[in-house]
Length: 99
Image (cartoon, rainbow, N blue to C red; front, side, top):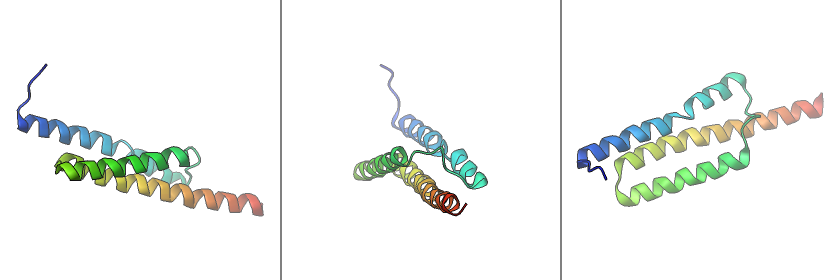
């Protein structure tokens, strides 16, 4: 098994955190541009959000800066996606009722 220095382990953690945290930013941008989140599953994304929140708590209990930073940013993006999912679904439902 490969041995990494503590500095290298932290660097790997930060790179992994940056990649996984930024993975949903394009999705959030597309939702805002289209004003639609029809393709997003509310149940799946709700579970994902709770999972990210629990990873944040876990990372905080370990005092792991990469886990704290990535999961707090990931949680913010995830909550934003859920917010727009609910907002745009309600707006779409009103249009269907009215029209």
